[in-house]
Every structure is written in structure tokens, then in C-alpha cells.
Length: 205
Image (tube, rainbow, N blue to C red; front, side):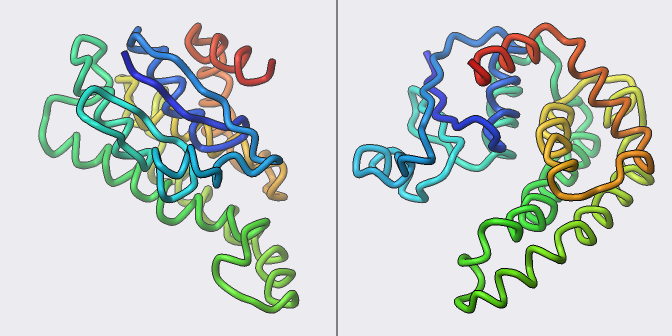
């Protein structure tokens, strides 16, 4: 039995969808960020980073979305959420690493400026830059990464819930979706999946 710690509106959505997708036995524990539960002593014992997601397994706790997604996929090989080909799997990891280390960080500059600066003027400058940086990231994704109908082509993989999760932030980041038809089509396709509908209903409740 797995236990996923998450908060609505965060990147933990990708792990939540993937657990549901593979039919894993799990429970989901919601953290209230407004009450700063992610920095409570109880949660910091689970994840000293004070962030979500965190996945409690029989072998210990995993953090960081790319690692959690790969672990779930490889734990349930019958779901076929990662390619068997070694190079193709490395491509999956490359895409998810980009979403984690570049795209998510660009988004975080909108409200997490204190991670990188101390002056209020710097925070405002970072926030103003977000529409430009997120547009640049997703222009690249649209052009070079979404093969269609899924990110990797015909096979649904762990790239798909991760892209879906981060693409859900685009409107709030001031990105023009009319220039991203593949990304928009991917979002609609994802929302037709029963696992996505189930998880969204739970996280929005």
C-alpha cells in the first residue's frame, strides 16, 4: 500500500493520476498549504524538503516527480507506462526532467521569488517575466516534444500526466493557448481518461 502526500494545484497531480492509472493500492493525504502543513514537524519527518509530492512505499519515501513517476511505472509494468526500449525510456526521462527542472521553475518565479532573491522589486520582476519564459518553454514543447496523440506518440507514458499537470498552469501564467494546439488537444485527450476524471474529482472536492 502506497501513501501519497499531495496538495491541490501542485505538481503532485501527476503522481496522483499515475497511481490511479496503474490501479495501485494507495491512499492520498491532502496537505493544506494555506495552513503551512508542508512545513509542519510531522510532515518534515516524511519529506524534509517541505514540498509535495511525497510517496511512502514499503522501501521508504520517494520525492521528486520524475523519480516517483518512474517508480510507479516500473512497479506496475503491465500498465506499460514506460517504453521497453532503453533509449526511448531515456527520452521519457529527458522530457520529464525538463518539465521538472526548467518549466516548473519558470512557473515558480511567479509566486516563489523568495527562493532566489530578497528584494521585493526582484520578486515583481520575476513575476513579470513568467508569461515570456513559460511561453518559450511551451513553444519548444509544442514544436519538438509532443509527437501526438500522446507525448511519445502512440504510447501513453508517464510524460502525459506530467505535461497535463504543468499545462494546467498556463492560463494563470499568461500564456496564449491559441498558439499551442497540440498541448490543448493533449489536455482534452487526458481529461477523457477515467483515471484523470477520478483524481480531479477527489482533488477538487
